[in-house]
Amino acid sequence: MASGLRSRLFAVILKRRRFLSSFTLSSDSPALGNSSNGAREALSQLRFERNPDRITQICHSVDLKPDSHIDRIAYSKAVSKLKDAKDTEGIRSFIRESMARLGCISERAASHFIILYGMGGLVSDAVKLFEEMPGMGIERNVMTLNSLLFSCVLARDYSELKRIFMEFPRKYGLEPNLGTYNVALKGFCVSGSANMAHSILAEMDRKGIIPTRATFASAIAGFYQEEKMTDVGKMSSLMKRYGIEQGITIYNVRIQSLCKLGRTAEAKALLDGILSRKMKPNTMTYSHLIHGFCKQGDLDTAKSLYREMIAKELNPDFDCYFTMAYYFCKGGDFEAAFIICKACMDNTGKVPKISTMTTLGENQEPDVEWVVLQSTPRDYNKSKELGKEYVGMASDQVNRTWMIMCHDKIPMIERVQSQCPNLSAFQVRS
Image (cartoon, rainbow, N blue to C red; front, side, top):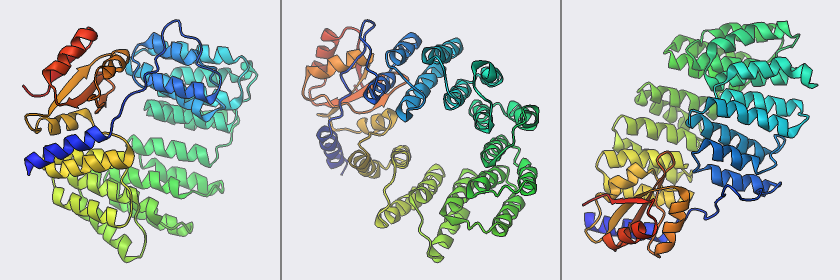
C-alpha cells in the first residue's frame, strides 16, 4: 500500500504544476503602474521579499491610495513584512513617506495610517497622528477614535487601549458608538479582562446602544478563555433579553473556545445540539472541531467529522486541510495525509506546508526524490526553467525555501548548482 501511495502522490503533484511568477522588480525598474494592476503586482513582489529597502521601493513604485481596497492590502502587507524584519524605524519612515506622497489626506486615509501604525507596533505614533489631525486639516471623529482603539488591539497594547477608551471620548468631545464599544470589548476580552464586558454592556444599555451578535461573540469567547462558565451563561441570557438568537456564529465561538480548552467532547455535544435543532452547521463549525480533535490526537473522530463535512457538501478551507495533513503525518497515517493533500491541491490550489510535505517526501519510493531548494525568488525563477520536471511544491516564505520532486535526483541538483551558484540544494533523503 505504501508503494502505491508514494507513486500516486508523485502523480498528483506532478499533475499540478505550481510555478511562481517570473515577474521581478530590479532596482532600476520603472514604476509598476497607477492602477489596481500595479498594486497586485506589488503584492506579488512583496510576498517573498525580505529586504526592508526593497519592500519600501516596491510600494513606492506604485501610486498607492488608501481609498482603494487592494492598495490598502498592499500597505498592510508592506508593514507586516517590515515588522517581520524587525525594522521599526523602517515602518515609521514608510508610513510618514506614504502620507507625504499623498499630500492632503482624508479622514479615511488618516484612519488607515493610524491602523498601520498599530500593525507595526507603534501605538505612540498612532496616538501622535490622532492628536495632530486638526493641524493637518483633518477633523477628529469617532471613526478615527475607533481606528486608534483598533490600532492598540493590533499592537496588543491593552493598557493603552484602556487609557484611550476611558479618557479620549471625554477629552476630545467624541461620543462612542457601537463600533467603539465592540473594538474595546474585543481587546479587553482577548487580554484577559473579560469582566469589563459587564460594565461596557451596562454603559451601552444606559446610552441606548443595542449590542449585536458580534458584541456578545467577543464577550463569550473572553469568558470561555478565562473559564468563567457562569458568565457565559449570563451572556446567553442577556442575548435573549435583546432578542438576539445565538445562531451558528455564536455556536462556532463556543465550539472553538471549548476546543481550545481541550474540552472537545463538550464541543461535539454542541454540534449534536445544533443538528437536533435542525440548524445548519457551516465550514467553520467542522473546522474548529477537526482542529480540536486532531490536536488531542483523536484522528479517528477528526476523520469522521471530515467525512460528515464532505457529505453535507461543505468545503474545507486550506487551514482545515493543512491542520489535517500535519496531524495525520504526525500520527503516521500517511494514507490519510495523502488523501487530504490531494483534496487540498484539487480544491484550494494550495499545497500544505513544506514541513508536512517533507514528511511525506521522506516516505517516497527510491526512484522518486524530494529536493529542497533554498534561494532568492530570482534564483528560483531561473532554476525552474532548467527542466520540465520542476514542480514548485511548497514554500516557506521566511526561509525562502521551495520544494521540488523529480526522478533524476543528483543530475537535477548538479544542473541547478551549476547554473544558479547562489542556490543551495539538498536532498531530503540520502
